[in-house]
Image 1: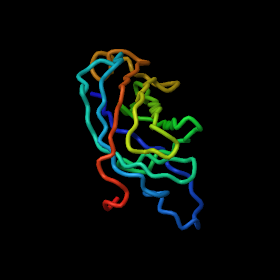
Image 2: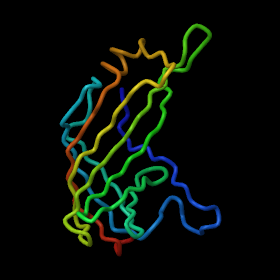
Image 3: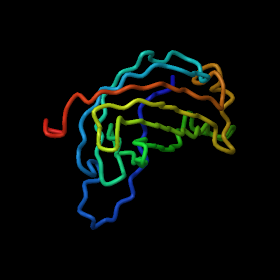
Image 4: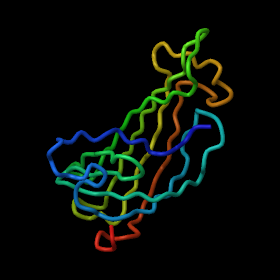
Length: 170
């Protein structure tokens, strides 16, 4: 079934910047995220509720969602809302001489509302995953097995509390 891990897009950094591409910015803390499923058109069994931990760092108005591979950058606006987005292509089934591969584009989006421009003790918002076959893909054999339908969406309402402050070894 569909794996629901935040897939990070590579962060573009200058080769000589001296910054750690896996831990950019200044740590804000580690957060325990609780997610409740609000929309599901992809089919299959999905976690509900779903809980996981994430680290968030800051560099000016850029926040970094750090979970797994390279961080996902998001922009913090004047109303203390951060918008994170990433896109990846997932090869669900390789192609062969008789049919094209099934390659699905996955778009991840998180809109997180913090209590204030300098208050990062918690956040709430919406986390969504959209799946659509790439042009030229043949995914018909995946309907009813991996996906109930394509394109499809999985969305969660999220709340998070900081469980480890930056000075706690973050």
